[in-house]
Amino acid sequence: MNIVSITGPTRQQALEQLCAAQSIEGVDALELRVDLLLGVGTEDLRDLIAECRIPSMLTLRTERQGGKFSGDHNAYVAALSELLSLEPDFLDVEVGPDVPEVLLSSPPSHTKFVGSYHDHESYPIFDSFVEKI
Image (cartoon, rainbow, N blue to C red; front, side, top):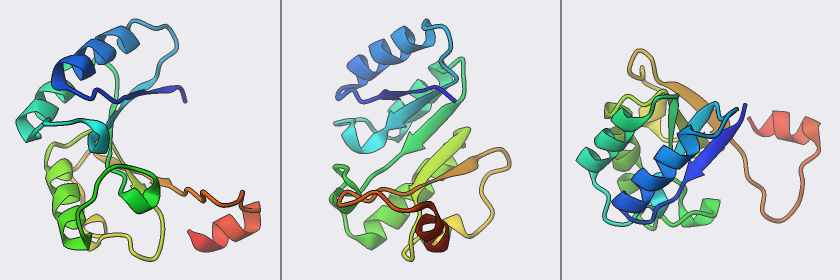
């Protein structure tokens, strides 16, 4: 699957990136890196998702996960819940022992989860990766 990340950082830049990416042959989905979009609120995200002619994926990475979201665990859970309410095609979340409870409840009917795992210190052996998830 070929996914293009939309990183903004402004709403206008994100919209320009989104439009450009959709014109590239072979792009299967657009990933909106919510943690990298500055000053982009829920309604802006809703508008950006509406502009997607191909599947959309929302990603919110914490600083610990290599992203820019600096809120605590409760703020992260609240933000993910808000992103789920936008009903994207996909929601990308980091797999691990602290997967937010909101993800364990029923998601909106068509939102699928993408489980990511990032180890910034080493490359995991497949068997150890499977054990972690």
